Image (tube, rainbow over the protein chains, first blue to last red):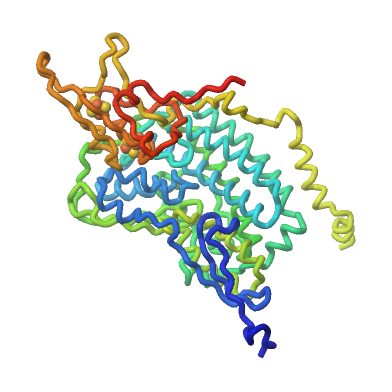
Length: 370
Length: 152
Ligand code: SF4
Ligand code: SF4
């Protein structure tokens, strides 16, 4: 029985957020504290709820496409890919090879951009101020490629159902190759800044451990799962968009702590560069978009497609009733599912670790709340 | 063991990080954009302020009043009316309202337009002092926004 303190209470209930700088959006975490020790947490979400799934029911399939970019706005291209693949499955169309290769290049670039934003802000939360500037500098190069390709930097609306709307611009290959050459030494530079830094290591090692078993129970996917030692990546497990053609590794670690998740993501960036290099070498010629009717009326039925987004498994479940508008769209967002594990990860830890764990989960609140 | 201890004592890990920061301090890496004196150059395909193009030779609007852009827009923010021209018996655009405050610049309207009349241009300065100012009429759509240019 702990000593009774002020007014006979030993527990303190503290609100973290909704506008706390370390929550990467508007998330409110109610912490139950005993001194500095966290006894339990309660996440209050929904501040960014826009009803995307409901909006889908009032839009045609083509019209809904720009909305998916606004869920995980850090990785808009991945969202778009997932949605397009799901509708393509529904109408039984496959994107031409040229479109598939370009899709792979753009989604992998987006994975790097997403991980860079994660690395910068995560380091910022821990107290390392420098990496965020370098990360944003490199991310800018990716956003420039996106802007040149499709005219927008963040909410790109890059893909269309059946393929691509935009042809590659002059000099796309050279720019992507130049980025790859420029980027690999930069990853080494980030590692030099952080990997051995004693503050970084002390703040991250053995913090927020999630074992493989617990990951599976919570349905956690993505780098969080791989850091716990499970070799599971949808790009290998159920290849889409021709990922089976590329040679890359799935980085895994054993401990499942925050430090391992950091190392897994760093390695993932290198593997993404590897995929991009292979893909950009052989962009096939041909049409960029398959033949898709102007008025899209998928047959009655349902389709579920999941892809490996930067944050984990991103799934789209679409039910069609044969009309031009979907009957129901359900999104399985990785951030939402991963956020569940927060309570398990911070129970018994210190309050400062909550910040580290929220950072390492790599959540985007736009996707959690939809 | 001793190596690790010495490394700890002499703060090797911290100096390694500092080396990176110093490497990045070359003046040629500094990049500051002097907006608004110096405007950033946006990409050719940039989706910015909408514009209704005129036929460069005759100055007539290219729009044929087909209403396809309004139908394509997910936000239904384009409202246009057309009248039948008595002389040529063709439909022409009469009024055109475009609510930029609700637009997400997805480009679907531009893709739907059969006559290349509607275009999302490279202008990106869309701020106005009033909410009503965000709703553009036909005149505004044809002339484009006129942001203040500063001399510096
Ligand atoms: S850009 Fe998109 S949201 Fe804006 S008017 Fe065109 S279709 Fe509508
Ligand atoms: S789609 Fe083009 S031509 Fe048709 S009404 Fe709109 S702007 Fe005019």
